[in-house]
Length: 458
Image (cartoon, rainbow, N blue to C red; front, top):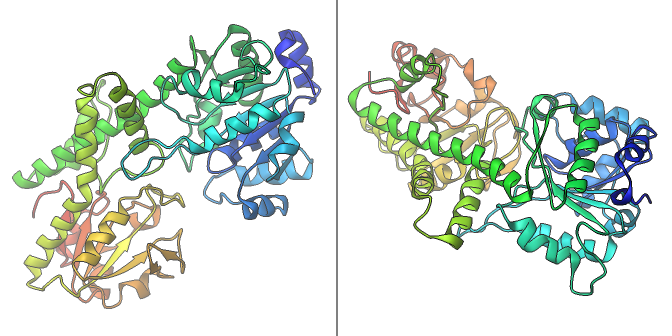
């Protein structure tokens, strides 16, 4: 065990180059596993810790769980072969012998949209008993500004006086900035933020991360500022998607195609394009907005009204999709009750196997309330149980006896769907496209009853 908090940077460089720096990544899910693999791939002995015994067993057996993360399958095979990476459920065995303890734990929200930090707090309590003097804790989990300084440090230090941040252990943050489905690409090109409770810890973290990721490391004055940057970038996106969703609804009513507007608008140098959709899902954007709102509530409940409004808009989009579907059924002259509806895509974003906070779920719930028979086809979830529905194994069979198709997720496979093919396979030819991937004129020529989010009637 190396007391790296007491070493100078040249000593740490030697430790890194010799491969003697020991790293522990707690939480090896969607972001944590690629992070751990990146550390191991840089030559540092890395152990992943997780409470999921099946995940740990699969990893140690050579089964890579993230098939939708290009590039990491090869890295996974290499680091296992070179014995640079392994996984365990036994945090007690690993933390005391680790120089770097990296936290990549989930920070979801409850049914009242309040952030849940129970996982990271629980690990913090364990670290109080397990940390060896001289080690450094790095928080990659997305937390609201001030959480590390105001809560986590106190939890780790405890009340017995054994540990003191900045003296006999270090703590800092380096918020992850990866986009699921493109994590390796993002890890190789996106700058990282580094904040810590003291300058020396910040320099040590920067030195280590520079070795692993070879990207720009941007120094932040403290942990809370780094976390504020992370939240700001994602809340910015959530708000702008809400703006475009409102435009889409407006343009529908006056016969303007929002996709045509956006494609032209993005030619202006200072316009950053965002696209409308059935809703905003995933573990980041919705949660990050509520993390920011939770922080604001502690200061002044009147702050961040635009963030609140954005959340209301984005959470209303599943109902708007249902409204479009009802319009399609009205045009067809058929009753929506007892109809068969096929959902195309349940992932919260394209080409990723992940249903966290997906807008597909409230759409399906609303369809069930209308007594519809709901079918699901998603290339990432074939013949499995999702939201109480056994998913379809192939698109052709799924279309049989279908009255309407709703495109919820813009998987690459769905971009190639021929409207004429849908027309020949469906019982009632209603198509609702919430992602702007079907040409509405082609759909009309094919004989479909088409409704597109923000596309207007044709």
